[in-house]
Length: 144
Image (cartoon, rainbow, N blue to C red; front, top):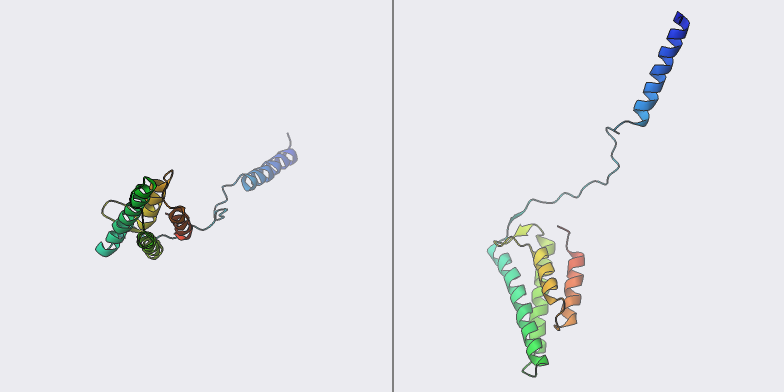
């Protein structure tokens, strides 16, 4: 092969290599993903906030026990009982929105506690208003 043919072949190889590296590159410097949300690191909840989690769980549990007792013919839950459980869930939702990364001593956050309460109510005859309230709260709480 003469020099001209050799130069032509080398030139074609360089062009082909440039095309291949451009088409098959790793997109360095380009990002096809959405920017991630910055989440504050987990930290211990203040004792009063941790107590709010426990109180909400207890208020809902107590209310649902009274509802079940009423369904069985015993004394049932009163409107005041519902109000206490509902208020406790509102407090828990507010805590989850205000401090989504605060962790109680058992490893729970307010958002996780809402989810736990929702799971506990699944399949029960407890008040559907509480289930609806928890669903609304979970939709407003930042994802963990």
